[in-house]
Image 1 (tube, rainbow, N blue to C red):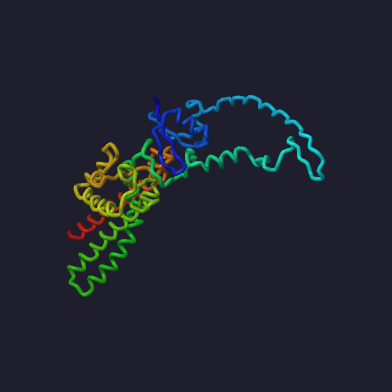
Image 2 (cartoon, rainbow, N blue to C red):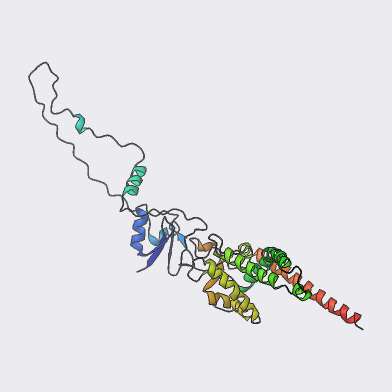
Length: 325
């Protein structure tokens, strides 16, 4: 028997339920054609309107109700004239009067269904980026080059402001110290690493973001392996694990290109994933496997800067060598 999952009005994944139960929810109005559903074997969540032929959502023909027999006329009872108003048994009294319902029949039925505590929940259209995570469905993991492009952007978006603040703090702490301390100022170094760790932890743990400016620009985010957002402490520890991945000849960073879920060493240590921004949402079909225009442009510019820096370094060494002769 095929089991189905669907998204309710609270934007939570429900199921599994058999196909018959899903069809009943749709026919009762608890689910609309825009409601999303998924079963094993499907690549993405799909609206019930597109699944109509597979599920057989066409409403059955209504059964005609038998005609209601007209009530027999009651006999008229003759009463003597007494000077007062006389009512016969065939005249309706006020107590027998039933007010006629006005308004659309569908609206009345919907109100009655909503008032019932046993009514099935109505499914609304899910927002593009729902706060509720959906565990099932296809997940696009962020590849190695997407993460490199995001790191290049973060080097400017986070690195430059942090460097300015660290220089100010280091200058205040190094005032009046020796020349050796000014060349390598421990206050500036510690401040730089600490502020960077705090910035990365805040961006990665903030609800609605789960990403640094670079990751936001590329369209990726950091989550737990179950799709939930990470905590600030986990994000803080992940930054130091990221430094460790780079210290061991960048092997921990390169691992993201070869592991099954594109995890680096720091991801494995901290139980995190870097995925498309639409992963673990109610609209996983909006995920994109391709690199993307922004990432491609950033990688090209980063490559040009790297080659330029290498050329300048070679020219500088050559100039120093010529001066020493």
